[in-house]
Image (cartoon, rainbow, N blue to C red; front, side, top):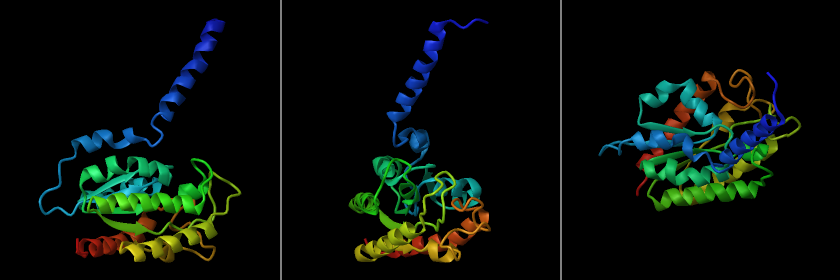
Length: 231
């Protein structure tokens, strides 16, 4: 079939339209809108917990669905997301769900530069903003360490290990200062390079079932401590 020049002009227009549409939902607010609308209010004695994060949180629910289905846990991770994107959707995907606790695992994609260059101070500001929103809404906070990372498969040449260590130092100190719970995945999972070993993550970034098996009791302890905190 002969394709006219007019038809060739239509194709780039369609592609631009798709890109424009995606740009309008930069934080991917649509990702969980339908699930959120179907979620009922927490029961009177329900200790609802929302897990807020990126692909590591999203993969957690996909790899270990029983961890979430057998508990009042709600996964709200989106692959590739950075802290400014999470901040935009924090009210919709956390506060509006009325949890008692939010577990935050974020920062690694900022270090990778997924949404542009980002300093550690910028990451810290976004984490601070999210915890302040949580506290204002009487949601208890569990701050997770960033997982070890030696290299990014999608960003060759970037060396994240030292930045991860520095960010974790800040997260721990910030949690202690503000009486949030800190969960240290990093120390339990790092190898001699301060990265994730292949036994826990085939690509060095995203945990497999063995990796999540290490994380689960640690976060359960953190959640238990948070629930015991005074209002």
